[in-house]
Image (spheres, one colour):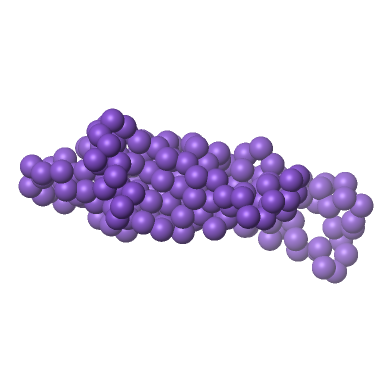
Length: 188
């Protein structure tokens, strides 16, 4: 569980280390506000992938003798880079799978992506975590996750390249080797 008391204590220390006074009017409540914010934005750190799968396992049986594909595009999300605690923003996540006897409630796909991004993360791991959870809840090995994001560790510091975007693709099952499935994923 997230220790808000410890976060508050350490934020006070960071403010002092920055040369500011945590007791001044504008900062007086900042350590508590940051602790509350961290509890919210890092909620996913409280759960394993298995626990997230159980939380959002709301599926419906279907006849899936075909290569029908379910795609949810442009799931908006943000996360925080584990290397700099920097914001990954303007993140768009696309999740696709081929049903294997059941389909997942569509909102659950967005909820899975949201919970996975509420962790200190790497963009590559976000795709892997979402794919793993999707395989568990759908029973399908055939899952794809594509992510496009800006990283403030590149845009606001360091190289300060404000136009650079990072793209990652996670392919599982038939998506790994079937070019026609990959093309269907991209063309839609």
